[in-house]
Length: 421
Image (cartoon, rainbow, N blue to C red):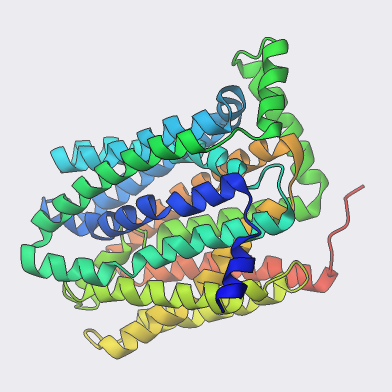
């Protein structure tokens, strides 16, 4: 067993190894404080509508950052972009929420999280650019695996909340996040190396007078659009990645409406809801350890279709579950999480293996832009309908999953995508 794990991790190359080794310092504090932040803000008097508005602002900021992300990453380089915008999007928001848990401050904090889109372009490219396909798939799976493992801490966080109270506990979680994320970002920056493609792009921009301009931005995105729409595989990868990100934003444990759904609608206590987060993480972890290592380019569509069907079953269970019936609630959470674990890694892997070259920065930025645009619409609709019936949270997630299912069935029917004439 040790030997197989060692062989699997040996496929990670230098930058991916550094990012993977240090990622827990971000994943654990972020998962814990974000799981309780909506309850924390509601305890300060914020309404469900205001919580929804905060989510919209975050996605508007993400949309803007997605548009300008590619030229910024090309100009600054993958390494410096990751450092600067990780500090801005990861360390500053919890500091603001710690010092001022008010509606205006929460708006500012969540707007700053939108800069994560710029950081993510640089971060993903540092891990997968100029590397083998095996490194790309393993690094994406390990990224998601660590994020899921971090969720196993939420039941322990629930114990802290039960003993210290929600407000004092969340302030502790926010403080730990600020310290951990600041230390992570600076240390990781010293250990990473710029990619060869990143160096070549920066050199080309310098020699061409690479200042930022709308005309340059237009030319770069025009070339990116031609690349995306010329190859159905790339177009499909972008579409699936965007739909899964919207689902991630609206209907998973990271959604600001996810935790209130269980406490307000299903009568789960603030302490017990930590177990919900733990069950969700266990389900996703099982998926990533049992199923995802078996996924290849050849069987990816079949796994995606089965995962979509599982998600739809889980959503139905959560919508019709009797209030306070923890076994039924936990079973719905588990089924949903098992399916999401497959979908998240499939989305990241598709974008990694079906794109190449200098267009990758533009493809990632466009995918982020597209998902932000869809997220804003989905959140606004979900927030409006949630106040009438909270089950709309998972109905909307189900609609998104149906879109992913349709794409996977199309892939299965055509077997492979041919280039458009």
